[in-house]
Image: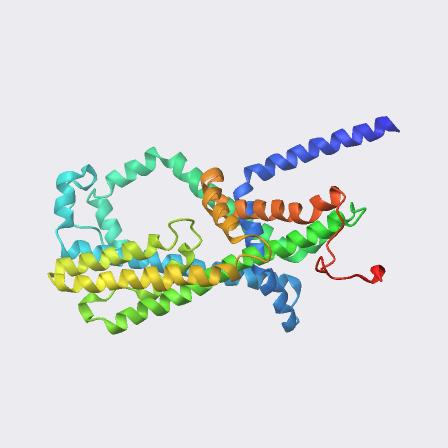
Length: 365
């Protein structure tokens, strides 16, 4: 009997190691999936009022996240291409590049962004350098693109089934509960993860709305030459950039201000640069500082300290890479919840009953 149990235990360890290795290889995708699951679970549950099937609700939740993000990125890329082309046509950028960069030698103008324009550029030999570069790095480019698409597919599938069957995982874990310690710990961690990660998503939305209103308001009050380009798009990107630790929204509004300043400088209206300084003040105070001071305490979870979360957001990407932005707060929540709920029980402390230490209990009368 003991030999069979040993064999089964060894087999279970082998399976656990294999599963752990696969999870480690896809740790970034799985982390993002957990983040999306807890960020959208309230929305998923709220759709029950429409009496929609679980699969339809999960599909709608993922679509509401993916479609706006794809449209935002696509719109941004298209605008960057259009603005870059206008800038090149207005100023002698090609001549300067042809004299200093090998890639641009013999290039008089950029090809038109159309099928016919690309064909003509190919026949003229203007794309030979780009073709050679793509050929030499074909393996790297293929691996990068295929890896990105594979991880994107994993994120979509895992998030979808977590929304549908997440409760089954919880029920399976509770089967090993003997003294209600696991149940108390899992319920506390589940609540705190939802509060923290849903707060992240809500923070992105609120920051984006504040930034859109602020940037459009700035354009409304300043003279025509001092306006910043595409204020609505910049505001939406500012909200997304609020997820980045330390630098955060600055990766959007600082380059945005530089672009506006370059336009004023090239136009020769240097007196309008003072308005760009005003734009930076609006971005720093109204968009960056005030929301962080006012909203962060309300969107940082129920029990996890705000300072610890900020440290997790800072050290996570440094230690784990990009996915550490989501992975470190998850680890922090699990550790903090364990120290607050399970550890005192394991050390023999009585569970909290919600009463103040000076308040009398019924059995004391």
